[in-house]
Image 1 (tube, rainbow, N blue to C red):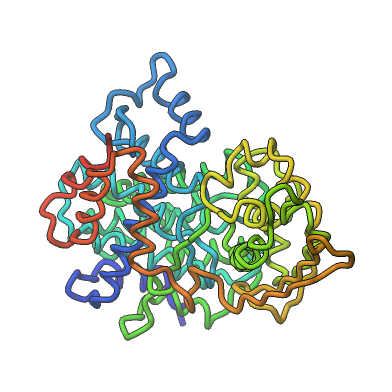
Image 2: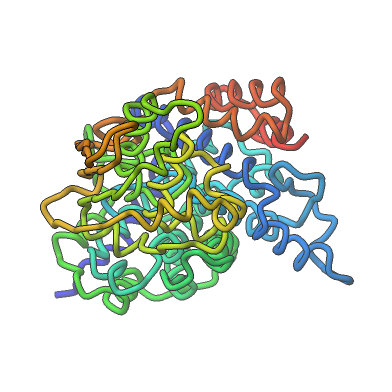
Length: 467
């Protein structure tokens, strides 16, 4: 008996998926995801990794990628379709401010969105078709992430880079209206290109994972559209090469049969209030709460709260230390993966926005550096990923002895249990987009995203994404 071809089942589900099949709350979540990611890309459109990629692929003499028809987020330069996808993918993830599918820790929106933006601009895709293709990309990517199980990420693979190839390929395959056989071939091509390792966290290369996945996804789908063939059960073959925790129960997630309430993976997507590893967020919540409570005791001319702090003892899930253990980051990219830095900036400044995860804050703020050294970490497998315990010991003004205050963050801001509100999400977008686009155009862009299903040509949205 032939084994089930889960790759083909997934491809058939996605090929047959129609906009009318999408529940209203899935469409709403897709628009939230798109708005959030566009804000991240605009906010990072001049980030060092983006500048370096543009210098390499657009400004190098005799570059074949320059002078194309596709928009680069927040910039005047234009590029060919696949190069624009590469650059936009790098921008979307450069600050690590993008969304997270909590079960898999995939950042699911960036790769399908970066691929779709340039493709849809050229081919004048409607808003509804754009949403449909985007959802197909997110669902494919997260279904494959679920099937991988935990070992893939624990063994050192960067799951956004690997699974992201499938997400971009699935999105473009849907935009191209490929049939089931072609769709399966596109996923097979993605399986042979997927890559990305966690050793690159804190480096420029990490941002390349999303950009290259978007670029390769376009190639995979276009090849399939022209009859470029692949093998049967390609995803299953890839899964068993890169994971030791693949089980039949997990492989069934690839069947794409989640049309019921609550089965859509995009509904498990979450949005970050802080531009750093999501496992740090409960610690930042706790330190911001501590700042509000303890900073009020500061008096002019006296020692500040950070000078009075003796120790910051925290208890977190082991994943937090596994992913974010950089004690003293050397640059902004490394601050993203430093639980010590996240605690320190919240206690020093009472904020944890993009400015607090910058090159200057990483290396030049003496108070932040000294506070990082006061953080002591203990792990506990019983503590959830979105939970943290903190005990801060500090000297009381004008008195001898040591006081302590304890904080328990049961669920971090931005988690499924405490999601960001629509108002918070739009404010996050405007805070990043307004300095690039201007306030008026940023507001118009947000409005366009909220009404994306009514847009006749996605090029009308893309026009808003440059100054």
